[in-house]
Length: 116
Image (cartoon, rainbow, N blue to C red; front, side, top):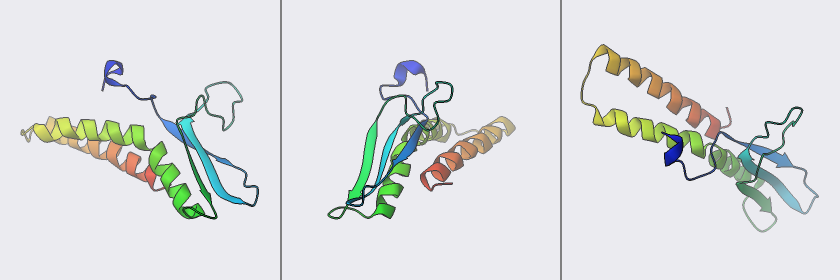
């Protein structure tokens, strides 16, 4: 994927939890991590927020949603790579090497969504 093709906020994205005030459940902000020295867990900019309250999804579901959203750029990249690979019909040693690399990218993206 080239930079020219990217129309969304470039990844990777991270999720940053916010403190609960008792009325609301968990809240997470999602976006690219700050690259400032000693930035800690601060976002460069906000892309999305996932939150729960008494009248919405559970805290656990909110955290799962935040993980899924934060994994989106890597998942998109993996899918784009997979699309290109699937179109290749050759079974050469080089094709198999690319297959292994592609599986690594896919497992990392899926692992992030699963909170690993």
